[in-house]
Image 1 (cartoon, one colour):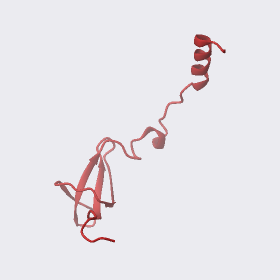
Image 2 (spheres, helix red, strand yellow; image 1 turned 30 degrees about the horizontal axis):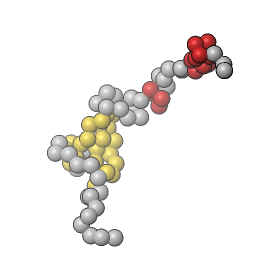
Image 3 (cartoon, one colour; image 1 turned 90 degrees about the vertical axis):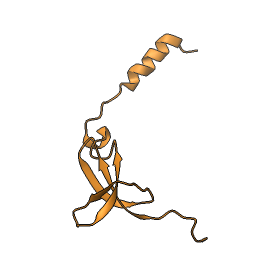
Image 4 (cartoon, helix red, strand yellow; image 1 turned 45 degrees about the vertical axis):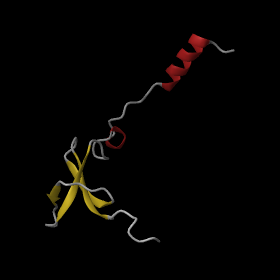
Length: 81
C-alpha cells in the first residue's frame, strides 16, 4: 500500500442525541469536540440523529404499512390492462 494517503483510523465516540445513547467504535471521522469516556480516556465525539437505540425498526415502534391497500388502490385507479 502507498504510505500517507489513507485517513487515520482511530477510536471515536458516536452519540445519539435523540436517545441519549453513546458507543465507542473505530472510525476515520474526526471531530474537534471531545468527550471523556468511561475508561477515563478522551475521544472525539460525533453526534448522530439516529442509531439502533432510537431507530423505529430496532426499538419495535415501527409502523406496518398497508401495502395490499396500496396495490388495490392502484388497480382501481388505473385498472388492469
